[in-house]
Image (tube, rainbow, N blue to C red):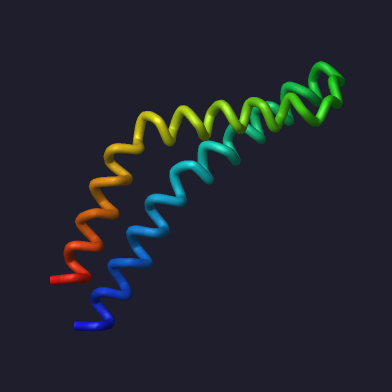
Length: 78
């Protein structure tokens, strides 16, 4: 019983944190390639693009993230 709850908690944590992390890594890769190709070495461009992309993911997927967390907590408390 306890192992199943812990496993479920780790799985939900990995899924909910993985999506913004993957988006951030993908944006960083694309911006890095574009900066290398254009020889623009401004660090703030990369941070700004990542910030906007992760913010968009959190706004779009926020309700789903909240539903998953509520479901997990209800399962833990029941």
